[in-house]
Amino acid sequence: MTDAVITEFTGMRGGPVSRIYQYTREGIRVLDGRRGLKRLYLFDPSSNMMTERDISRQDKVLRRFVFDNYGMLEESFSFGHPPRTFRYEDGGRQIVMREGGDYGAVGKTYTFEPNGIAETAYGRNGEIERVFVFASGSGTVLLRRGGWYGDVERTLVFEGIDTSLFREPEAFLQFLMFTEKSARESEAEIDEQVAKIRGTPAAEPGLSRFAYTGPRHTSDDAGPAGGITASRSPARPVLRPGDRSAGPQGRRPAMQANDLSDTGIDFIPEGDSAPRRTLAGNPAARDRSGGIPFEERWQSAQPDGEKLTQGGSSRISLDERFQSSRDEDRTLPEGRSARIPLEERFQSAEQDKEEFTPGRSAQISYEERKTGRRLP
Image (cartoon, rainbow, N blue to C red; front, side, top):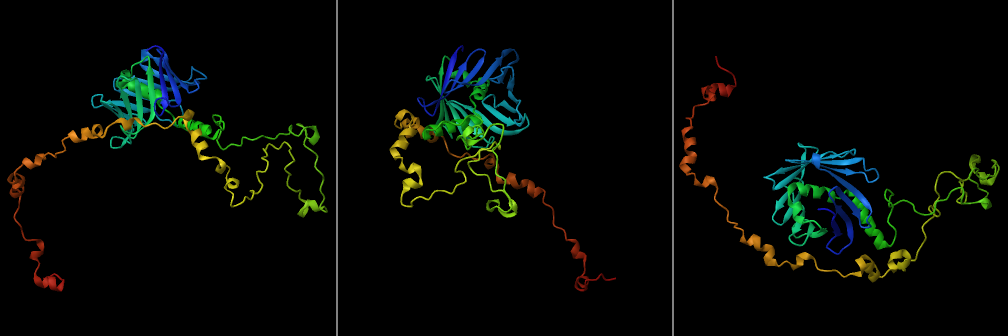
């Protein structure tokens, strides 16, 4: 297992490379598509434990995964992230994940089947969220969304390591942890794809996509010509109550747009101006994207100008898809109660039947009922 590499593609194999996993004896290095280090996992065989470390300070532990004979416990050292437990059930053919510890609510279940592993959301009675398809002999693992014939979300290609290793429950839990994506990572990948389509650079990590990215004006921008220096604000004219520009009660007018004094507020030119009027009959004037041809938009959205190819499920014949359901015996068997004769069912009811006795109201005379009073 030394120097094994797992390459993850977005969608089918041959698509954009989203992440690369370097699997060694010491641990696992998770790299992005540009081979930048994103995560680091280290093994501790003496205590049967795996830890996630901070890439900037490798002595700092972010998460700890402790394995035992009953499953795995995940401990997060970040505020607001409760621990998760993964326990083996059904003789090791199923893994149950609970939020908040051994007695928490069931979040997901992972069922081991002949073709792979099915992930069920919202506990035991939920629907299949995705499946891990272990293709035999091809060295790949497909992550399909929604079921065994759903869309391919990711494809992992193994080099130097056999995929059958991760079919074992303990190894699968390890595989699940270092291939799991956080919500922030998924959002960053979406922003990167959007930036490629729009042809604009992606936002820096930790910066809002709605932040102002234009030139920022400071007191040094005006220079000597404007009379503004970094240590002194420009002199303003003194306004008297009799001046027209003073306004009512001698108030000063609002600061002009060209007054670039160091107030600590970034000024966005034309940010408060009224929107320009455009001609109603000219779509290009109303929307800049209206002048971009459809072919150019579609071409920029395709990776390297490749054409769409048929999905892997299109090569599966209908007979093969529904053969298992046709071969399955759907005849409903008789219940166990059908073998109990009627005499035996109602015999106990006949034996326990009691004779009817007159009620207490039968002891009240007709005169008392009619008058509503008790007679002496």
